[in-house]
Image (cartoon, rainbow, N blue to C red; front, side):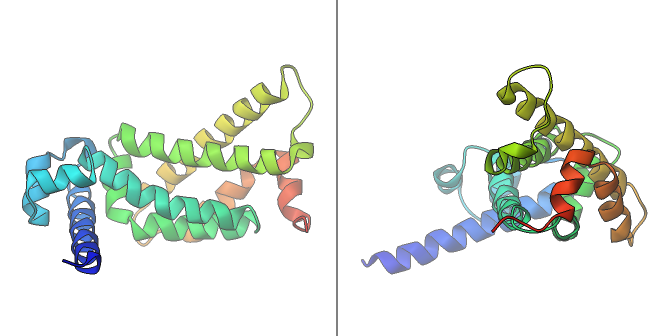
Amino acid sequence: MSEEPLDVRVRRTRERLQGAVLRLASEHPVEEIAVADLVRDARVNRTTFYKHAASPVEILEQILYADLDRLRAEWLSGSWDDHSGALADHVERYDGVYTKGLVGQRSAVLHRLLVEHFAASARALLDARPQLLPEGTGSPQWRTKAYSAFIAHGQVGIVEAWLGEPRPRDRRLLISASAAMLPSWLVATFTAAPPS
């Protein structure tokens, strides 16, 4: 047996699991999805499921982190407005999941995932451009961690507020609120030309 058909089967199984978790997470917060429901929807057995992930949460995290990591790479070389537009695209792409998990109830998984992404993005920017870090009390490492967490929680709050708007949502609300919440030292970063 060649490896190519195996790779195709593995890829198809992964796609079925991903499609199933996205459908189910649009109906129930991901924490409430049982493995039994996921394998039934994906038409795979439990053994096959556990070869791919330990839980439905892990599959959803893989999907969302892959997309968010791509956004981070683009953001580090672009503008805040571009990033906010790409973030709106991401949230709209997974609208059902985010709306079910972040509007009216709090999915700890989705909230944590977004906070971690935004904090890691802010840390990556500060690591790449340490001159941006404002002076202050505490070590540069502590200030980087604190400022990154502040930006991350604020951005997640804006995303949650935007998701609470009736559909169709005005993307300009997310983009302008994201820009308005930026600290002044970070605003200057995105109005200046990117480093060469």
